[in-house]
Image (tube, rainbow, N blue to C red; front, side, top):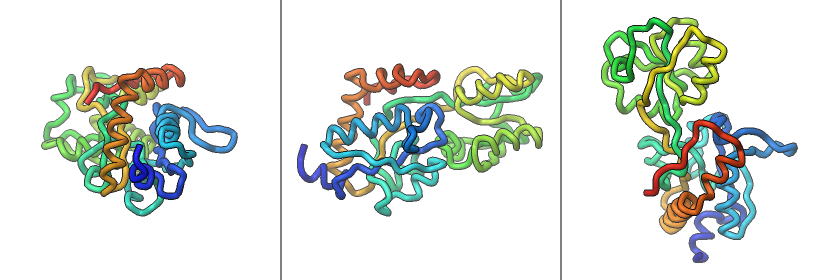
Length: 241
């Protein structure tokens, strides 16, 4: 541990960790004081402990709002999905966990597979600026992608305007399916969201430290233990880089 690493990652003597509250797999509750509880906050706390500094959580309603504050002194590390658009303003570790993203469609839909969805005339609702939404922006070639603010907003758009498909994280779609048995989830995935730890550019030594911390956390069983601790279904430990 060099003084420069600590200075880059916790320049105030406190590690300010940006946490996305909209990911219900990684943030599963709140303390009596309002701090987030879950895998992501615990990973941030473990990083702070390794640096020998306290952690302070800086919460955001969406990953896009977190990314908007990169380089502005609001947070020192940010725990969100690593996507090319975000990598332009943040330096990411490899993923520490992965989450499958797929589509929900009405029962009886002609869309039977993931490959069927990217066709002309198909309308896809998606939560705006989500990691999987950014992936779709980069990869959908023929279908019409309609970003909507928030998970609930995307679901309502899909239902009320009879869209052909709703893009989402499989665990969240499974919850929707419990309330709407007239829908179905397509087999397979169009991507696996890579949940990573980002830091502000150009903190090169700090970024290398975070990258190594994440690899050690996966290899040692720390990440697997946190998934088990919080009883989260739908998360898997990401492969070693």
